[in-house]
Image (tube, rainbow, N blue to C red):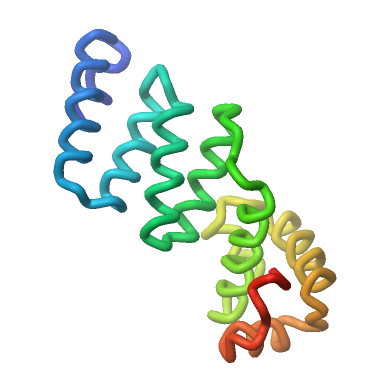
Length: 154
């Protein structure tokens, strides 16, 4: 991957070969999370981000990595790659946001983690409160920690 980045500007053919080699090596090691992160990096440098990002997104779903799936969805939107199952993606985003709230993070901290503005976090929290019926961060955090909110409410 490092070689592909190094050659990206000066020698696109060499960069493509190194990208192909990096992806093949990652897949051969059969470590889903590491493969997904390699695929995301390759998508940023490569010519076919759609297939790479979609595969990375699926792998991250298999290993239960909601933050990385959120970041991959962001990459997919930037690359104009459709995100599969919009409703599930929304639910995962809500769960991630609720989990970050339950860990005591404030809006600025959540914004930094998710790569959003604090205003975007505030808007998402407002919508999450409306969907879940939670009236406060404390109520939301309590529901997450007790696992008392049904997944369908996310």
